[in-house]
Each structure stands twice: as structure tokens, then as C-alpha cells.
Length: 511
Picture 1: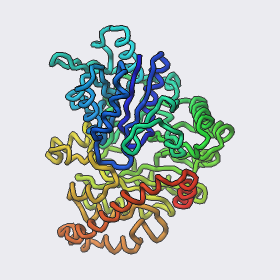
Picture 2: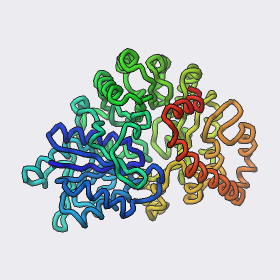
Picture 3: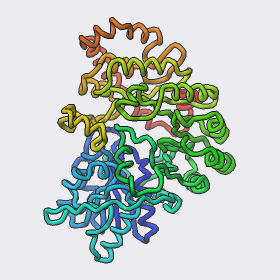
Picture 4: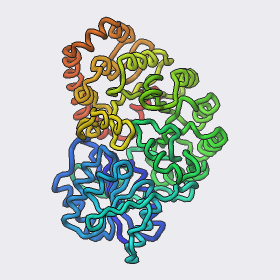
């Protein structure tokens, strides 16, 4: 079978579609991937010229697969509508958005794959090739003669090592670049590879798709967290390192890499240090950070770690239903700060939440002030993803009436647009957004520590929450700054040589 897979991800770092490609290739199919990335403009959709180029890649395909997140679902819908009018080949819609919003996806596509798709897509391709019925294939929703067949999901693959490594045979990959689809090249990796070493999350926060996935697979798995073995990970990374000489680091993107048991981390670090000898980044969780794990990771080559705080203790427990206390964060931060000369630490928080109270936001700011410096603060504004528990609550209570209200047409860091859209606690949300960036003993991003204390005086907070005029004026200035950064600074940075970016990142994040 000739199969074309299409990624709508903003950047061509999509491991999911590469894994699907590997599964299909292992089953004997001929697969190519087209990354329809729009990294130069997060908001735009594809034009007719770009779609006609994509059409040429799909004409000889016997099956077409496309994936999307909520933020790129409009792009996926445009591609599907365009291709359906011109081709008779089956198109299957998959990815996170198809899993959490299959009711929406089935309106634009006759085949929707819900959940983890590795086995389902192979079964579908084999059935089409052998002209067999596809109506009972698990994980598939099928629209047929005004009827929708909703097949249940199959059991999860418990042993992830059974899954082949993601497909990085870039001679069969293509990329949309400057409005033209061209051959994928090693330089498009930008010196790094994003790598998932496991699946699942024990939290299932109400803002996250993991809450829905945990429910979807409640009776279809043996455990919430599934891991690739250290040997599998090292074997895969070693292959990639040999394949791509210009790689500078690996970015391990598991939501909770530090949940791995100590024996696994020790084994991984021993193998990585001995065989890979290249720096890497990872994500950690406050509750599972300990001194020995961090020491092992740094010794193996870890230079950066991202820790999810998300909200104040009250926000986490009462709104997100995330079992995490402020003391968990402070305990982990004290451990990480011991290694401040060797490890760059970024803390992630979420703001612009319509359910937060002013007290919640102030508590989060005070928590950030207590964390030992230096560190980097990443402030993300809440997106109510369709299908998430928080989105369902907001729709039920009338806070979300249209797609625009949910904000998934915006990127997380577009602070001006989020604040103006939600208009809740604008003054405090703006302060938190202005704290984004490098944090030292005296400064948080744009703001000095003393200025934050001045801005948080109770009477000043009360007055500015009542009257948004000053906030709106500052927002205009911030919006102009962000526009310059997105339109000039970021494109300029992306055009620089990889070696310069590595040096710049080391200076910027104190690596």
C-alpha cells in the first residue's frame, strides 16, 4: 500500500506520526510523511497553492492519514475538505484532537481513529489492501450512509518496547517551508530531537487531555504509566545520533520522567553516559524529585529540567484536581537549587483561568517568590481544550459558548489576546505574565521583586481589579513588544546557525 501521512503540528517534531509510520513500514507498507508545519505563523491556515502541492503527494496514495491537536484542527479540517473533493481515497483523522473530540472530527472526515492508533492503523491498511470490511476495527469511528459506527478502543500496548522506533528515515519525509513542500533535511531538526520514553500520566488534571485518556482506557490497561526500557531508549537515541551528526541534544518530553523508579533512572543514566555522551533535557514532577535522581541525571548529561507547578495549592486541588501541595514544589526546588551551577531549571505555571480567584493568583506569585533563585519562569495562559473536564464544566456553566471562548485558537504565551478574551482578574494575570523569563534574586522577567510587592499591596490590587484602564494601557505596550518578538526576533533566531543557537541557549539559561 502507498500511504501518505500528514502532520499539522506547528513544528516538525511530531513523534506520534513517526511512530505510526514505523508501524506501517514494519507491516510492509510504503509510507511517506508530509509535515505541513507553519512555524512562521501560528495563526494562519493553508492557502490554495500549498494545498495543491499536497494534493500531488496524495494522488497515488491508497490511504491518507492526518493528525491534529485542538490548536491545529482548523488546518486539518481544511486539508481533509480539500482532498475529499478531489480524491476518492480513504482519509483517516487521528491524533489527540480526534481522540478527545471525535464527534467534531467525524463531521469532516468519514474515518476517525480514537485513542492510541498503532495497531488500529495497521489493521485498517491491511483491510483496505485485502479489500476486507473495516466496520469492526476497534478504535475506528466510521461514517457510512448517514450512520456512524463507533467501535470501542482496544487494550493498550503494555510493553512499549514492542513498538518500533519512530520513523526518522527522512528520505521519505517532506516539509512545508516558505509555502513550498520540499524534501526534509537534517537541518530541519534544528540540532535536537524530541523524544518520548513512556506514556500516561498519573495526575489526569482537569485542563489536560490525560484526564479523558485515563477514563477512556480505564478497563483497557494494566497500569497508568507505561515505560520503554532504558535499553530500548538508548538503542534508539544511539541510532539517531549516528544518523544525524549535527544533533546537539535530546529533549525527553515525558510529562513525568521523574516518576520512573530509581533503578530505571540509574540504568538509563549509566548507559547514556557511557554510550551517548551528549547533553539532554527532561521534565520532572515536584513530588518525585529527589537528590539521588537529580545527581544521576546531571552526571549523565542532563543540563535542563522543566518542573510543572501549574497553580497555587488551592487552584491545583480545587480547580485542576491535581494532587500537589506547595510544600512539594518548595522541597523539590531546594533540591534542584543545590545544582544551580550545573542545571538550568524552568518552572511551568498556568494563568488566565476563569475559575481562579485573586487570592489564588497572589498565592501562586508568593510561591514563586519563595522558590530559590536563579531559575526560568514559563507562564502559560489556559486553553480549554475540547473534551477536557474543565472545558466541559465551562460549557455547562456558560463560560464557553463558542470555539473562540475556549481560546484554543491562541498559543499559550499570547498574553494580550488571552487576557482580553477572558477579562478575569486582568491586573493580576498581567503581573504574572510580566514575571515570565529569567528569575534572579532581584528580578522576575520584566519586574523587580520590590515592584511586585508594591503592585500586590491589597488596596492597589483591589483598585486595579475594579478599574482595568491601567491594565489595558500596559497590555497595549506588551502586545507591541510581543508582536516585534514574534515577527522579527523569533524568525531571526530560527535563521541562525545551529551552533550559534546552542551557544546562545547556554548563555541565556546559564547552562
